[in-house]
Image 1: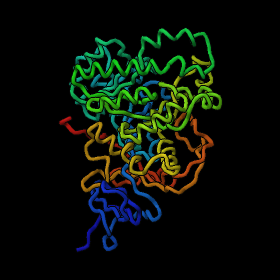
Image 2: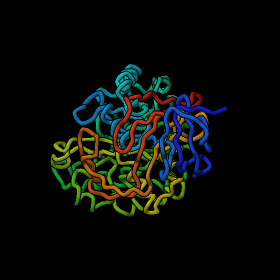
Image 3: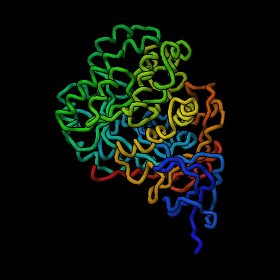
Image 4: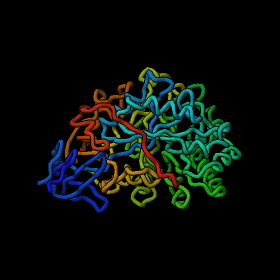
Length: 443
């Protein structure tokens, strides 16, 4: 009897849990239904993946899409459009919007806003605050919740939990892993006079220095261990933090960003000015090298883009009135595939950081690998394609990337979400079909 599928992805090198396999992928009812030789099967449509590498759908677990709030620089439609064009199949969006996402009602509002407008699947973090710390155990269970996000240092928006007493209250409420922006706010305030009246942007990593990050992460780990609560430390940027986190793998998981792996001070500030300004800062090559060692040593669990757009007009303000944040969701895949091409990263490690690791850390249900019964999410890439990243390719409302003009080897050729071809050859070819990501209820 001839097997019938909705879609067959034919002739590619497929990255399965067992590694790269030359096989076809059969998709039925939004899920992977067969892996193997499907030449005799029939399908509603066929995607020719000859010469391409078929990867598990990339999940970007840290984006800021600004909605509700300053949507002149991004919203859920434009942000997910960039994600799909960049080969990303799902995004976890941050809570420092206006108003911040700190209630079940605010979460439901975001889901309503995303439904019918999102090009990718989506989930949202609930922001921790002193006011809602006692309700977080209930909030982490609301539909589409990626988990709790806590800011220990001031960044974009008003969310902040800076003192040990309130951090402990956050960690005591709930069971899912708490995701943390780890910078010590007291030290940031103490050191602010060095830049507040104006400075060169190269002072950004001096103001938000290594000790600011290390002190915060030390406090976090102490409090997390006392509470018996697992934490996920975002955008780790220092060598010292990586050494510390390697000693606490039982309670702490680790994220790194392409920006910190690709750029280095002082060159990035000399060349890009405030376009390289982000929190925590891009630091010198010593720290960049340490992040790569941590990836190769297995200390790093996953990767997000920390897509945080601001307009060029806003970025042109004199430092430190210029806002911190870079666009990134659309460039995550090409940047990291270029690192694969240059031999800095194995393809297996790329998959672990961008899909399987995210699934494991956050307890994502039915995503993160090409295996029977999982959601049919695929990032199809040409590992040999040579392209130049350009501003005109960027879908963000801000229209710029810090990597404009960079030549890369490796490019996303198609984004397939639950068996639907959403992007093909740099064009969106489907409707906005994004749905809420599901999470394992036992975590």
